[in-house]
Image 1 (cartoon, helix red, strand yellow):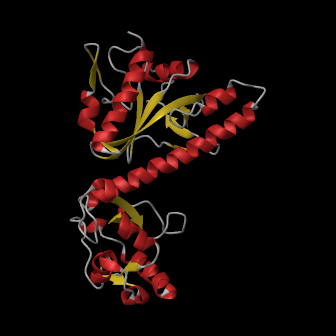
Image 2: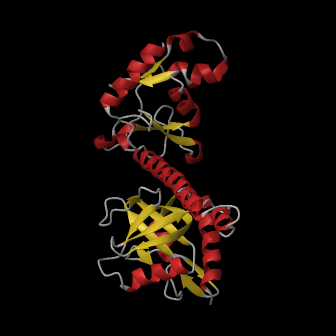
Image 3: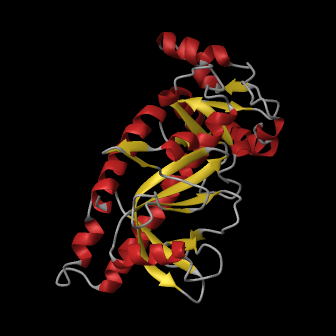
Length: 302
């Protein structure tokens, strides 16, 4: 049974699971996997580098937030993935080295909470750093083939430019990956409902930053987030509304005076001075200092 065919089937299966579960995939379905021509294909296991029993080479690599390996972005914009242990010739490390040599795609799993993962694929190992006990990982745009096409045509692009593009695409992919992780953590903290109106349809919910992520204090942590439906997220980002440090919703004065149909009346104006829904765990409550800073900007606009 060829690894290549199994990988294609696995990518298709992951697409289906994302449609069912959204961004966050439960570990039990990944460890159970799926049946392919009567054989069980599992996607994760006890180790971060995982190879199903029937495959010749690894199919996935996993990073767990707060785990023993410090995976991060390198200066060239590629994802750093640590070896398993300190032996460069451990079978798992040798397996990844062979994956790199043959330019075989992998799945990258980011563990955001116990038993909950976000998947990104295809990823490729592009460098092996024996001295640092780590690999460099490139995350490609799904189905694009951009880097493969470019790097295979020396007349179109130099290797230096291809390396830059790998770093660029990987940096953007990692940013998106961590944005998805932030959304998933915030929504879980709020039990997948809008903190303003209680709407519970996950597809209509976002994680709103209290302090924008590109600013100081805009960390992708739950206390800097609010679970909001898309309408209330837009209203919050546009400073139509704010949340005070005592967790009350305040509506901008000019918006309160407007007359523009039932959505404005019931969806925004009637929330004025109502308290938001808070996470059950107090350590996940919105940070009061960040809310105060947000309210300061809100008052300046008002």
